[in-house]
Length: 493
Image (cartoon, rainbow, N blue to C red; front, side, top):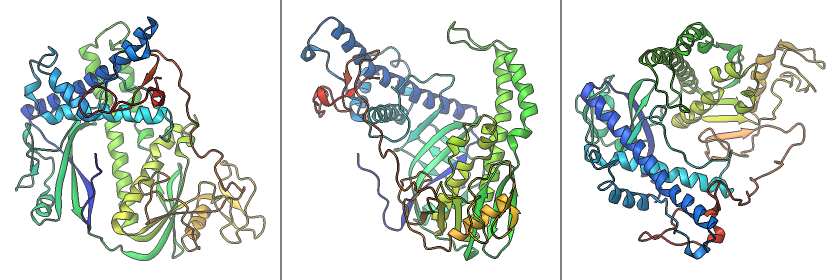
């Protein structure tokens, strides 16, 4: 499938709006999301059943050529097989017509993408940690969502309602006539709509093709260096010489008292148990909803704080300098993991990335090994060691005495005026993505100018629970599929 390319002068955006559905519409939303989950589970069982069958046949000594043929996990193949099974399978025959075809296509597309990700991970073609075999989605814990790409998808003329296929007209929680005006003016075109249950509320996310509208920032020639921390969320070193601080609200710490009380009540109720098949009591479900509300409120407060901070910075400065922090490594510190997660350093970096691109400004990302805290902001001398317990920087060369975070902010600000070299860019907040508006700079004081290992080592095939090998996504007997050599196929587990 070809990747969508927007027309010149347009960019793909997403507008996420909260819904205010009534009881009838809410039932349809739950039905469509549940149908997507059922279709996903059917696809996982449809593909992996052949793996187990081939394992059993191999144990009987059957030759490789006589084993059960592989089943393809490509989306066209899964869609064709599901359309044949939904009319005869008693699990779907009685209710599959109640939902839109997009609900089932959502689950099948997710299963196809999951198997592709697993195959690339096994083949060493995917960065990051190892990905396991797709598993079934639990009815209780699965995230409910459904994506619509065809049918009646529009924002009504009043700006207070949206229309979705088979679901009908749904009221929005807020009034958004500006989106309707953009559609009528030809500045925006809706591509798809995704409904999702998130934090106890239903949301719809419109993926749109929108005309580029650059908004001039307040101070395009000004720069700011941002040093993120836990005690103070951010130290802002301005190019005019002023240093301001952004306090850390610590929403999770403030909610610990209510969270402990709610968790204590949940622990005293009859909880679900997958091992024994025990179902939760009504009192447990009620107490669990109360506990979830505490988590939802913390998440909403954190999101509001970060959006206000990043929006204010990107609307004021033409150049923003941040650090490339190892957030995953910081989260493995058992003494600081909860506060690091509460501060959400990675989310700040992600929001700054796409908001600076929206304003046409520059985001400079300092190298991860750049000694921003150990370097003197006056003379440039670098300390050999500076423990985290030392909060005041004292230069042994020029005698500068300055707060540790303020010194780091000045050093980050100085990177904006240096002759920088574009080594890699972070267009989506992930190292390796190309974006001309983002520059990664910095020095390697220890001489680490190259990675120890550039790619993941290829994993060798070995027998697993289902044994044997698995094919590519187009292996099978379906029409249009292409048989592949079993020697080049991936190993299972």
